[in-house]
Length: 193
Ligand code: B4P
Image (cartoon, rainbow, N blue to C red; front, side, top):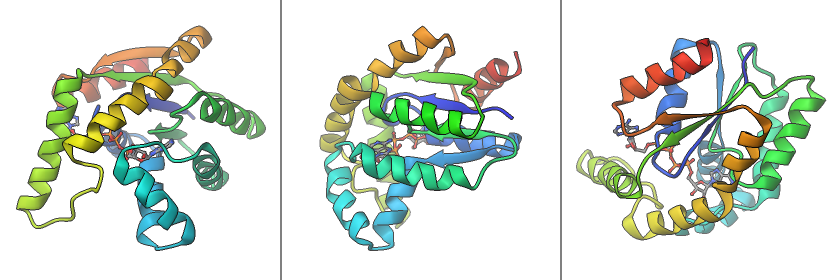
């Protein structure tokens, strides 16, 4: 069993690579972004509260996110978990360490996807344009204005996790500017080493 975190700014390709890992290995993707969008779509009180925060590009409260992840982790995963977009704050990282410890498990790899800001904005704006052209729903936070706030939130609250995991000795960096297949190959090389 392997438990990994995919860490990186918005649009770095965490979700894209998590889906590849689900296909190639017997792992479970735990995307807090997807969980929050599901909560939003189901129209629950919590969903209504998080909708506005997400559309603006801000981070949802640690309490809500930790509750969601705890629920999903309780179901277990034979091949291990891929944490996609979680943790995003130091409080979330501490909560994850506690949850894994309680389950008698460890964190094996933290993989940072490195991508420049200009490319991130382009990717996210493109995704919105492609969805619009195909008549598909466009994410409320996939616009240039929200992306700027998402990036600010990343540098302020999430980037400190790089030092946190570096100190623990399980941080690896991958060039997220490479093609989707090449990024997948780099991640596989880290997991198979
Ligand atoms: P997320 O759903 O996690 O979204 P993300 O960070 O923007 O996306 P990701 O990095 O997965 O990019 P993707 O693969 O889709 O978060 C959304 C919001 O939810 C947050 O802003 C926050 O409000 C809330 N939230 C989530 N988790 C939270 C937490 N733990 N705490 C608090 N709040 C939380 O890729 C983007 C695009 O790039 C795609 O179009 C893809 O096709 C393209 N792409 C990917 N890799 C590429 C490559 N190598 N080359 C070219 N294009 C590529």
